[in-house]
Image (cartoon, rainbow, N blue to C red; front, side, top):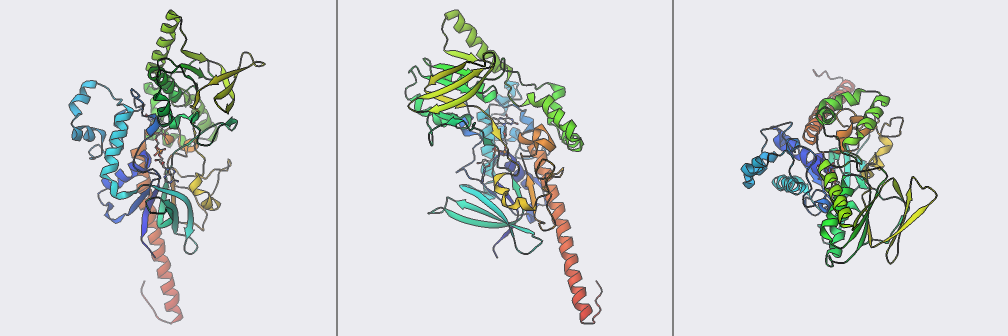
Length: 455
Ligand SMILES: Cc1cc2nc3c(=O)[nH]c(=O)nc-3n(C[C@H](O)[C@H](O)[C@H](O)COP(=O)(O)OP(=O)(O)OC[C@H]3O[C@@H](n4cnc5c(N)ncnc54)[C@H](O)[C@@H]3O)c2cc1C
C-alpha cells in the first residue's frame, strides 16, 4: 500500500491555500501529511478577470493568515515587506489592494508552499477504500504532468474539497463549441485578446448581468475599444450599490457563522435575502460613478457608444456568423428586441452544486437535510453514515448553513484553522477508537486462549 495522507485538498484556490498556510503555521504540523491537487498548471486566481483598476472587495487584513495568526510569515503585510512595497502601500492609505496585486500575493504564498501541491492534476472521483467502516478515501485524478496524461490515485484519511464555483450559462444560450464570440466573464481576458488585434474596429459587444463582473467588463470594453458600441443588459432598474457598511459587514464575521449556523431555516433564509446585496448583483459605488459619468458625457457629445438596457432579461442567444441576442423588456412584455452583435459576454454568476461533482460517488454515504443537501457540521465536516468514517470537509458550498462568507475570502484563514483543528480532533478520536478496537480484539483472543491480560 502506498503513502496515506492525513489530508488531500481538491483545488488550490485561496480556500485550500489558506489551509496550507494554517498547516505550516501550526507548530506541531510535522505529523500531518498533506497534498493539494490543482487542475491548473500554476497558481492563478480568477486569471481572466484580473482587470486593470479592479480592486479587492475585502480588506487586506482578511488575507490568508492575519485574522487567525497576525504574526504568520504569510500575511499580506509580510508579502509587501518582502517585495519592498510596504512603505509605498502605506502611503496609499487604502485597505483595498488591486486584484492584480492580491493575485500576486496569493501566488507568492503558493510558491512558498509549493511542496504541498501538485498542479495539472484534476480530481475526477473520490471513492471509499479498504474494509467497512471505511477510514480511507481513494482520490482519483488525471495527471497531465505525465507524458500521456493518465488517471492515478492517492489515499487519504481526510479530504477537503474547495473546488470553487462553476460559471453559469443559461441553457437557452446556443453557442459553438469553444465559442470565440459568446463566453462567460470567467474567460473574459482570454477571449477578448483576439478582438484586441483590431482594437479600432467598431465592434458591437453585449454584456449581460447587473453585478460587479458585468460592470467591470463593460467599463473595460469601453476603455479598450474606442470605436466600439457596448450594450449592457440587466434585469434591475440601475446598477445597485454593494452594501459594505460597518454594521452590515459583520455578516462576514466568524461570530455570524455561529449565529447563522444555530438559526432556524427560516431565519437563515431571511438573512440571506436581506443581505444578499453585500455580494450578489451589486457593484462598487466608484465603478457605478465612472459608468454614469460616461453616460452623461456621451449625452453631452450626442454619441451613444455605451448603452444600458435596464429592466431587461436575456431570452435567447444564437451564435452563427455573428451573435443574435433576444431581449425582453419587462415594461413591454409583448415585444422582443433582437440585437446583432460581434460578441456577448455573460456575467451570469457561478453555481455551487452541493455535493460538488468530485463527491458524487461518496454521496450515497452522506446524511442529507430536507433539501437533499449533505448535512455539514459547524466545522465544515460532512455528516456520513456509520459505513464511512473518513473525514470529508467542504469549503465554499455551505452558504445556506454557514452564511454569506462561505463562498468568499473573508474567513478563509479562520475557516482553514477550524477545519484543521477538527481534523486533528477527529484523528485523535479515530485512533482512540482503533486502539480500543485492537484492545477488544486482544481481549477476545486472550479470553479464548484462557489468558489473562491486564489492559
Ligand atoms: C472576479 C472575481 C473577483 C472576486 N473578488 C472577491 C473579493 O474581492 N473578495 C472576496 O471575498 N471574494 C471575491 N470573489 C469570490 C471568490 O469566490 C473567492 O474570492 C475565492 O476565489 C474563493 O476561493 P476558493 O479557493 O474557494 O475557490 P476558487 O478560487 O474558485 O478555487 C478553486 C480551485 O479549485 C480548482 N479545481 C476545481 N475543480 C477541480 C478538480 N476537480 N480538481 C482539481 N482542482 C480543481 C480550480 O482550478 C481552482 O483553482 C471574487 C470572485 C470573482 C469571480
